[in-house]
Length: 116
Image 1 (spheres, rainbow, N blue to C red):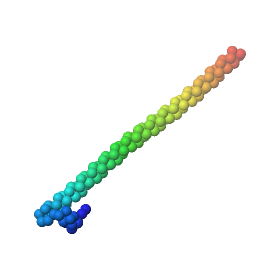
Image 2 (cartoon, one colour):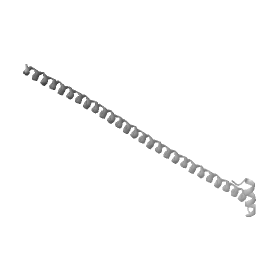
Image 3 (tube, rainbow, N blue to C red):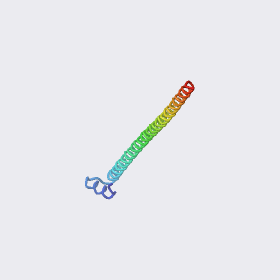
């Protein structure tokens, strides 16, 4: 950012005086102001773009977290189901063995009664 004195010296070196010098200084100040505004707008757009990107990343991470959580829940439910099935199979095998034992016992009793 050029100071007024710098702009005045530059204008005088260019041969400007009076109204032309004042107009030159004002034009240069206007140009610098416009450049600062343009840079500020670019920075604002850049910040806005970065914020949108961060928000997008956050949303994607949330989706991924929810997906993983649902996947873990499905795996837990599957393990629970398999555990219950295993327990049912074990109980069924116990009942089958008890039934076979009772059956063998009845056959033995029947055989003993036939011998009497």
